[in-house]
Image (cartoon, rainbow, N blue to C red; front, top):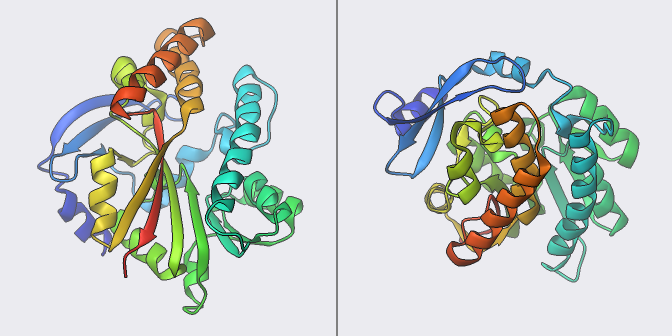
Length: 296
């Protein structure tokens, strides 16, 4: 599906305006979130052209591309990252007693892949950011690619597990990308996708200041229904949905900063706690992990 077909599919010119958000990280530009009723998804508009997307990542504040440990946010991010990496490895280890091949798309500085490699997985990564990719290669000395197109050249190469930790929301051509994922995943393989959930309590509370909207780097804003529908079109099946509880606290810190000018950790942690508490009943956590399988 071409970019033009993708835009027609989601009807950018016909969708209902949902919310206006500011890019707090780089440009200070304002973007509109459009609501697509059919897919229950929000679209960032205007959608930056592919050639311009890179400039919106050019900031030291974009933590996933660095191992920085300077600011309060850096320190919290690194602590949470180390904890969640252990949980992620535990999750993928639960799929099979045999450690086989794993592809991590958007591998950043390579910490997750390094942990997988230490657990006897045969690892491959994709990371478009040159500095992050260089750091990852220095850590694990395994194959780290610039994009998935490099992997698709060898149409026989498939992976037992493919992971995308907060990556799908960044992908410009969503439908085409999911088709590519299917080509790269083995017939009995498992795809793991983690994304923010715009139907969570903290998203509703912070509104335009909710840090997980992160326009325009986040081009798509998913609900559980949208994930089910979009992947279902490519014959994938959601077999399990899991919470990412720490996200509510970290996103709360950033959201408080955007809203009031300082992080206000007491308020942030209270809202994070409240979001997780409410999600115990309605399952709408700040971020969700989807465990997805091929159905053919």
